[in-house]
Every structure is written in C-alpha cells, then in structure tokens.
Figure 1 (cartoon, rainbow, N blue to C red):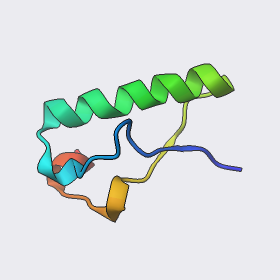
Figure 2: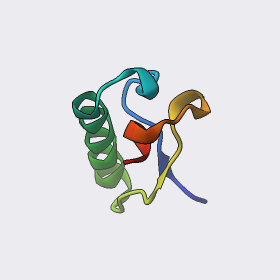
Figure 3: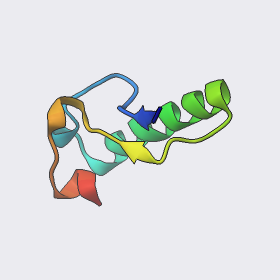
Length: 56
C-alpha cells in the first residue's frame, strides 16, 4: 500500500501562494511520518488541480 501527502486542510492549492502551499505540505508530511515511521514520497494535489507554482 502506498501512502501519499494530500495536504493538511484540503484547499485549492492552485489558489494559494508558494508560502501558503509550503505551510500545508510539511505539516502533513510530519504527521504521516510520526504515525507510520516513514515520510511519504508521493503527493496528490486536492481536486487534481495543479499549476506551475505547485509543481515547483
């Protein structure tokens, strides 16, 4: 089974700036790592939405 990051609050990440995106993902990474002992290597953006800011 694969576990991936899907963001902390499930926002429309394409409507956020880079700093806001960066506050969503590490929090989720840390929670998953604490619960499972491994950090996820996969990320699926909420709603399947992506843009250049999110990809970078």
